[in-house]
Length: 142
Image (cartoon, rainbow, N blue to C red):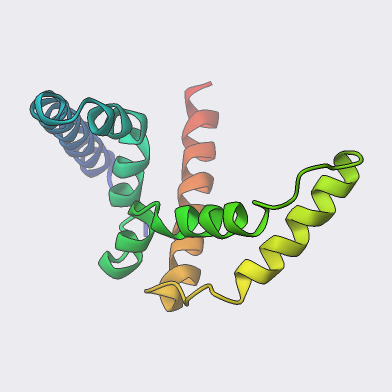
């Protein structure tokens, strides 16, 4: 069952207003944060689009907490630094890649399960629907 054109237009306007409001909120938050910590404010601006994307896709809260955090990747980087601290000479880039691969396999043993992992298939399905919808909208405007 298709939505009437008026409802689609109304939803589009609401989404547009909400996106503008969120962008303004983030801008205000960034100004406040910059007074406290400049690099944190830069990080906020760097990830602004990703923050809004997680909300737009309606990612469940538990999974969103994991995706918002850089802790999992930072933990992996820490393990790589620790394991490769004594490696001084690589013969070539292939050797470097082999070392990195073996260290990552070692680091994998310490990985924990992503909180909210059971909801990942739902999010993937939403992404596919959004991409399909955006493709259709692009075709209609051309």
